[in-house]
Image (cartoon, rainbow, N blue to C red; front, side, top):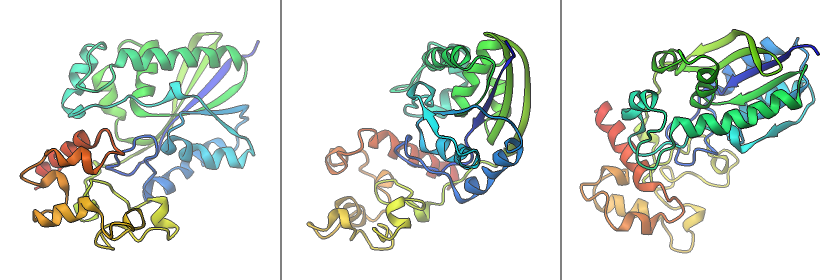
Length: 284
């Protein structure tokens, strides 16, 4: 039986911030940078494309899959770690204790367990073949840690801004034989352009509704968007203007009882807006 080759592709730069982690799209830079993945893989023999179901990972390997005229199979176990409130502040503690997680967050032990469960299935199902897997920074890091327990917080920080990042792993059965980094793009810390953040904390720069003309954008339309056609204006937008702020999280009354009432579609809205507030404080 020949060796099994697995090529992990950590996604390119994605839009920041974005409240729905699953549908967060790539930035304009990310869309360009993903072509590097195509450049280094187009001359390889690829037997299968697997991926996290998150949009940013799928879109990163999409040009390669289309080049080979192959479908991308998704598995939810490859998804990224669920982040809770103030996730960045606890990065070191999570790596010191894999069982720890911030409020509403997912511990690294759990991320590693589900990723390794599906990854071992891949090694069995695609034994002797070459597979590309679209993944995420933390999810991939837990797999690398599984095979090398010296991979810790310093190793994570080394690759945290590499988007995309391509790494090849060669196996004999389930035994790792070799690891080789194929490519990466080092991206600077992505500052938030608060002039493009809506009242509810969204960044609709690459929203599909806006891109295809179905929605003018909350900021451009002063809150008069299709979703609020019956009431005439976005209620969150109107509320922030009444209180003299542009974003709900910047209001002196935040978080008030109105927040979950006005944004029932986003169960994580308070934590998301707290994150916006913390980032605003860092940049101002």
